[in-house]
Image (cartoon, rainbow, N blue to C red; front, top):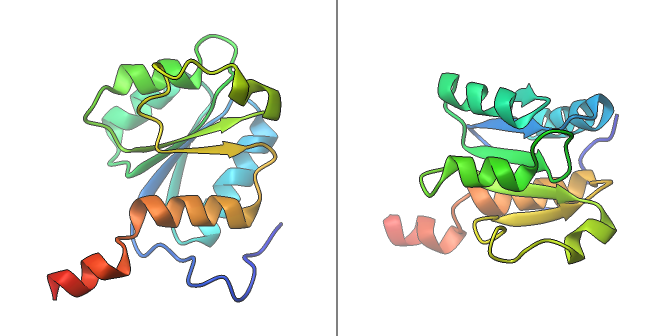
Length: 140
């Protein structure tokens, strides 16, 4: 399994739970592993309906969700969550990104293209869950 690259800053997230939503078991397990390397607790779902059930049962800080799934899409999950939702990362294929309706994708916090690298995932998660260092200094 991949490990985090050295010299890219501190990729470890101190606290938090991520929800990985992907109907492809291999992709889902790989992303779960990469998030675990960052110190996150990870729960997983293979569909939008399963994800909604997980979100009722757990405190989730970030959702990493595939765009294309058999019954409902990642954008359907985003819409179901509404405005009061965790950070939301949408996984797409290269050709899928161009076809996404901008209005439907308005609440997406980050887009990642499959296959996702450990570095890209770590940087996206850190940017959404870690406060900027200036915010930490302002709070002191």
